[in-house]
Image (cartoon, rainbow, N blue to C red; front, top):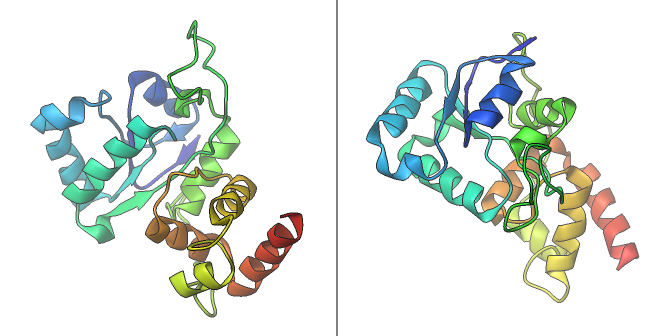
Length: 200
């Protein structure tokens, strides 16, 4: 079992069951959109944000991002982290049909991928967290200059980048920058971008 300092926020009970099988952590379930109407859920998340910090680990579909955005706006910035799973097409074993967007949720993702997502979010696991990357930060200007935003085929470039990093396409520019600066040095980013531009 891996011990996670932060409280993990997930959408459903099956997500909690999945995580509890290999993580020692406090896990709060939003009951899907129940977090919008049940004030006790958001109150619990706020309380744990003060005590341990929280990390949001929702599905990579539109519903997951709506839930993530709602929680994010309810908690001070320094007390919330964001862990992302890749957009993986398919369905969970217990379901007869795939969801509306055809993406596998947290409960169907491999343990190692979830662990990597938590590490990449900066979570403290077994007493330590990944050190932030040193050197020059990647900026919005860099995204523009490299064709990742504001240009022809920018969306295609970002899709390839997201796939290579195992993150969903739906994240905002600010969240993308946060992830890039956690995962890559500026030099590593430039190298990846060069490879992407050679593919297109």
